[in-house]
Length: 274
Image 1 (cartoon, rainbow, N blue to C red):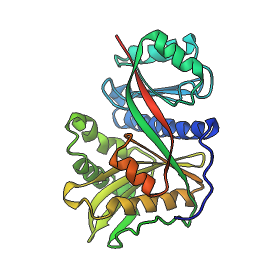
Image 2: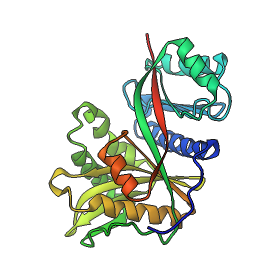
Image 3: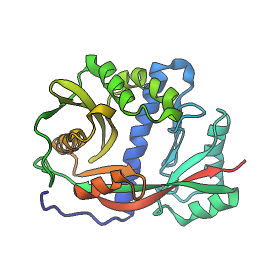
Image 4: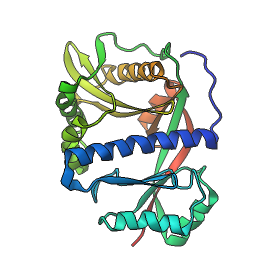
């Protein structure tokens, strides 16, 4: 791994990371609205907080950036809660610990409860980025073309097949992905597609997501090859920071740290109790 300077994990960095993830999810909601016009998919910006509705049970129906750009007020929270309730969705917020203290006070007053934790990781990148472990050179990675989006979705769906609770959401991914403008990546072994990855680029930050490998092709180095390819692609397109999210203490977090990622903070997901 190249020697590079890591920025301090402060509010300025957190704002960049949270805005990038919000931007990526908002783009997904826009693609959903295009692919499924009757879905009611929509997002709004409430003074820096992105509130996204992707369907009543979608994991994307939530907010990002709450309290990150302005102190949270009762009026702002009312607007956000109304946005979800009018659409028959529960209210969820992914909140950074660097949010303004008013955020946590108001969430407690309203009866929210923490239900999930996420490690937000980052690392500096440049066009010459090389990972400490060598990828399997038999695995080839490329950006998918417009006519390969259905192929990408099929491979991703097979890779996520064990997540049966999200089967409906994942089944629609093909049509949504066809409307997405974010670059997507395929990894191939012996000319057979075996793994996928996605990238969201926003204001110098490259967000890595969409990692999926078909069960029969795991432990072949596909995700390592996809990681290096996406880091290099992001850097070549003006990014100086890469980010990803993982379950605290998970294999995904451990693998990310092996390849130069550091934990910026642990984010908490809050749910409004009925």
